[in-house]
Length: 161
Image 1 (tube, rainbow, N blue to C red):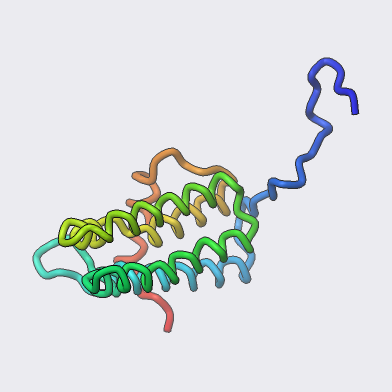
Image 2: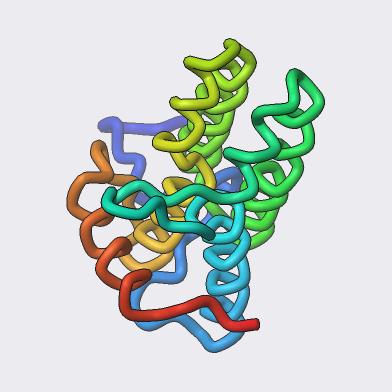
């Protein structure tokens, strides 16, 4: 195929899916809520008194050297796999994978890794990125704006059981 005048507007790349921008369908919203509940359980289950820090199963299992970190990797991989099934862009999946990789590598460092695990919250970041991508069709450069919104939502809403 010959392209004249560098006009690429008629070419569609099948490797990149179109996001579900706008209001999310009930099925997508339910799946996303399930992923957010997994992230909440793994990373924000128990508040530490007199602090803004919350701990989840990830923090407790991360204390077990190597095996704890590998076990906590399974829910994180499930979140990424679900995002791929929902049609997430390649860029979003790479960013989500990097969040999990940072969590895993730093979690392997004794003591410092456990403290880092309590604050990094890769699955929560990933579900926030996925929700933002589904609603807007873009991947933000920073999570600061959407993290504040998400933390406000979790303070008022508890996950469905």
